[in-house]
Image 1 (cartoon, rainbow, N blue to C red):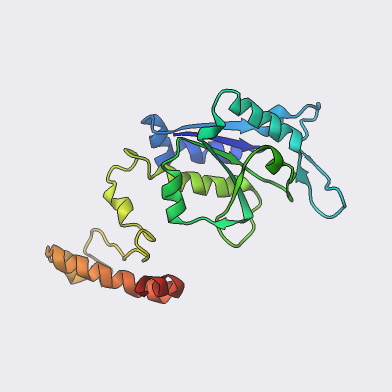
Image 2: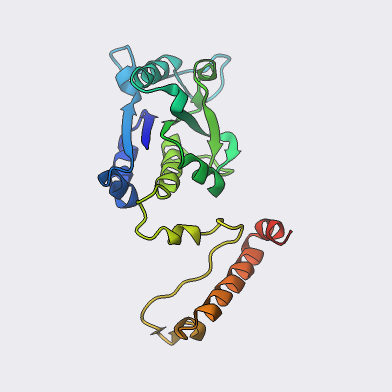
Length: 230
């Protein structure tokens, strides 16, 4: 997979993209991630990437020119037909695990990270961006949302997780949240691991985990539980 990320603040991404699972994926050659500094495509000596909005109002808006120059440069070397263009935005459809799985099957993802008040709306006249929201709240930078989406997608690529079965038992994979887990020691400050998990009876363990998943989902996410039982 190839991932291009357009950002005015590349340092926000450099650390996280070079650590943990994403770093392993890049080292294994499963994904190639390129950061494009939007300021490199500004045409004034101050490297300006934002301006005041027409019509007035608070906040600044990312300018159209440097964004288009950057995109033109990306697609001068890569085919847009094979790319999915993503703009993290509170106006987008809520990002869910099914979307992460769909994106993991793509060969090329391009992220445009918003900042300030937003992005010049004319971007959609030039490139087919799809808006995706990671939740009903506002972040200071689209880089944070883009990183969350990239992480959720990259971990699903074949060969990235050491044990792919662990992904199949994650929360949301079948409509339920995940069960609680425990590890050694089996007793800590008088708190014991449930006996069933120490029994060695895999049938009983699976049944216990299923019940736990249903109970946790019913308590914490009744909306998910309603869909599950229906």
